[in-house]
Image 1: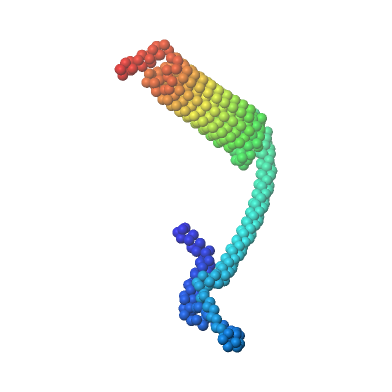
Image 2: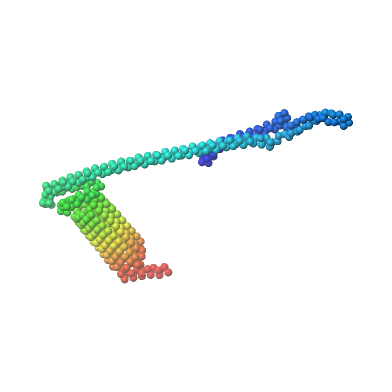
Length: 452
């Protein structure tokens, strides 16, 4: 289809030249045909032509001596016109016709090219103008949107500030009017007041939505007013995403199921806090103290936990996949059935920790301390345990498939079998007791002898 269309286009462009050429050829053929017929008629001048000249001359008759008149007749024959003569005669007008036609074609082509160039120039100008207008409209729209956004943010800031001030005023009144601190823990009035405080707190936190700065201000106000530490205000399921709580003292606080997504808790004190089911996705928890905290089922994926203290904390069923736990302290912590796949536990202290059925697939545990840890049923598939200390660890049904044991210390590891070790990589470079080491290589030598 493309070749046919191109052929039609070429035919249209060359149509005038073809028509003119055909007309000239047909005219020449007709002329030559007529020329052959015209040679039959002498009077037309196409055949031979003779001219007779008669002249009178006087001469002396030598016999008589008289002067006599002589009539002399001369005939001049002209050759007939040849084909080449007529072609030469015809060539000039034909050449003029051809040159004229070619000149017209060139002029038309030049005019068309000029018209096309002018059209393209106009199109480009229109396109450039349209783009300029579109850019101007877009810039104006963006400016208007930014202005609307700024106005909205300004309005939200005013409303959020008013909501924050109203909250603090009401909580202060509640604290002073009800004299909460003086009421006993079992006093119904205290419980009712704390229920009101909880409802107001959760409401204002939802109202502030993404205003992390003011959320942080509310929690710090509750800390200063001793609502959290002394009055044990229940803040379970609180929405604290984006809040800045770095260095805050939240020890013993009840944040069951709370949302700490993206919260800055660097250096915060959360010892003994109730954080079961809480969401710490992407939170900053470097150096945070979770001593004895309940983090069972908590979501800590992608959190920055380097240097965090989880001494004695309950992290059973916690989700720590991909978390940065470099140098973190999990001494005596419970990590049973926890998901630590691909987590960075380099130099982490897991001594005495309960890692029963924990998932450590692909985890990085280089130089980690796992002495005396309960690793029964744990999965270390493809994990890096190079230079890790597993002395005295309970390895009952522990899976070391494809794990790197280069330099790992497995001295006095409990319930460790030859089959488990040989599923790992670089098991020959690990450290064992002399007896276990002998068993490993004795079995290896026996297997080699059987092969040969």
